[in-house]
Length: 487
Image 1: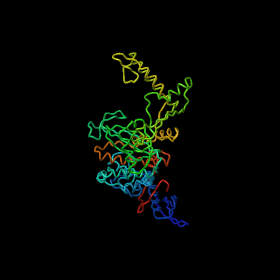
Image 2 (image 1 turned 90 degrees about the vertical axis):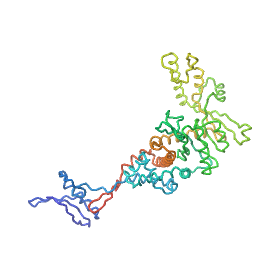
Image 3 (image 1 turned 120 degrees about the horizontal axis):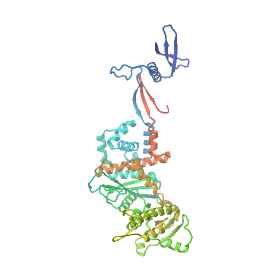
Image 4 (image 1 turned 135 degrees about the horizontal axis):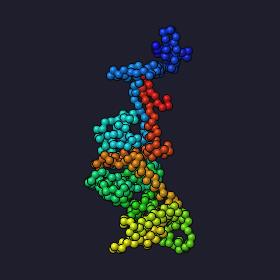
């Protein structure tokens, strides 16, 4: 037979042992360990009971086996403490808890979306699996309208701006994207429009403003049929007025540019760095080619073309501008390869070896098809060149070009929001719910950016790694034990 016993050791600890005895009087003692308090004693006794019944079958009588000898210990709670505490720390450091006025429901929705992007109702399941006590879904529904208000969004934006420490010479990046909805009818807000994903479904247009590092500052939603160029000024002017910024330098892509936008930016006293479309070969580039007819273009060559303000513009306090044109070998290689492929397709279509599809190099004149060699020559001449327009005439070309190339950071934020965080409001149909969802997404982007900057990991890797480590509370007899990965 075998039984469990406890004995006092010379050091004052309590040893837990299993005694194996036989009818002949011989016995062997298996020492399991020593404990210094009642909780440790109960844990060792539970381990001893499991050791005694190891390998033995159990007759199922339909009774609750928890707490009986040899049965698994009851797990009272399980919490992903390292993951949750880390995200809560990031949320507090960014000042989002103060911006949300201590609203724990909003915090829980934000952090649950980082852990596992899902619907609002399913986020309660994510919180439960993380070991966080959450409210009921009816409470979430009651709170959502407050998250859609302009005051709530401005408070979050103010917290982000304070963290970014924007000053008079700060750069801000602006870009837009679209989020589509699986419905067949528009409602005035969700409307069909130009889609970067080439979809015909109703959509909304999202404008994202970040600092030079890609840290989010503001998110704004517009009608799906609103032109991209019509979204930039409302967002930037609203942000500037809300945070009392006197001067901010706006960096945006060529798709954000219109002549009216440039004029309005300058009239608002904003500095800007914008990409410039090149429909024709600029004079300054043509002059350089004429002076160097047989010389290959050096990689990184920058040509400057001043653009003085007209008398009418000076009367409206619009300053001078300057355009920098930069040539890069790698850009030229990629562009020329694309031209070669498109011209080859156009030639096959002209020869009747392939169907006529959308191709800019196919020229149609009645029933006659030809390859547009004039357009080909123009695009080859422009290959490798990119223009940058700015009213920062005191800054050199390298500052302007380097600032523009920070736009990849805002593109990364858009990719993160669409893929890792699944920001598309699939389960929302009313504008109020969509606005509330985007307030959550702004906070999610801010926390994710901070975590990535601090750890050097992607937010996906951070969640996947820390989610494995859990703190478990176990009931052993009359005692409760807390076990963590490093205890």
